[in-house]
Image (cartoon, rainbow, N blue to C red; front, side, top):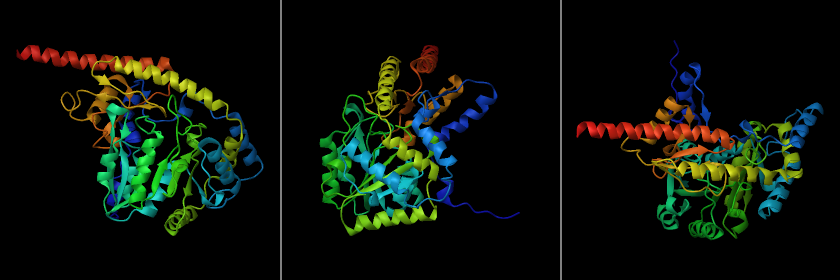
Length: 412
């Protein structure tokens, strides 16, 4: 038998959002209903891809646009992205500084591969989207979280961010609107973060995939505010255009200087070795950006209703408290008795799943420091489905509280 040695970098990869799914397999075999509140996939619920986008994909295939496209992406799509960024975010970029990726996750992987060597540090908000942590580790770097303050709506602690800068820091990550907390950062906050980056000659990686999915608070793009700090914008088509399974994203480079040019080239070379992003999907992506946009308001209105319901209902459950998200479609409640009744938030999530079928994600998967003792819940399903799941959660919490109270009486 051959001896196969698997690298530590592959063996140690973690992705909490999907790792929890393995615990459903036996439950599904036994016929248990699963409430999927773990993955932010609007297309899996009642949010549908715009018809003009689907038509554009079918037409591209019928017209035999099934060939390799340029590694950096089709010029038609890159120019459509330039127009979108100006129209939506008031960001001025050129098509030459736009690269097309197979989803935003590939963009994260590529930019971190170009930035991180052994021992280098990437600063990210705690909690954050897990690939920023996992890919930093994958490239032998060290992920470092800066605090976001739950009591203030999960806004970054600027003093803590400043204190975490070291000679090994290679970039500051901003995820805004934030996954998993749903926080939306103010222009003042972003400017303060840009100032810190400028003081230390660091680029900013700005993840803005939920840029059009905000409620009361206005979204402001990092690149719009930046004067001379290099910004790498990361975005995609999954969340606003309901194209999750299509795997289409992009990044752009805004700023001047040889270092940013070298970073862009380092990412572009990676685009070449994976050949290209899906050509027909790129054609459909351009149709998405240049086509009707009025559907976005309807999506936001639906999500706002579900956000309000989830926030109110969760705060009614004893043992759970949560802030109100201002963007995206996640809510990040604190589970009061993690550390006593449950040793970890992962233990809470698994026990909840096995007893009720409600599948959510452990908060420590988004950062072991500032995410622990929490859980991320997706509020994409209609309110009726959310009500069923939250009723199960409430019964679960009451059952555990009664059991503990009964134990205390027995020992008295």
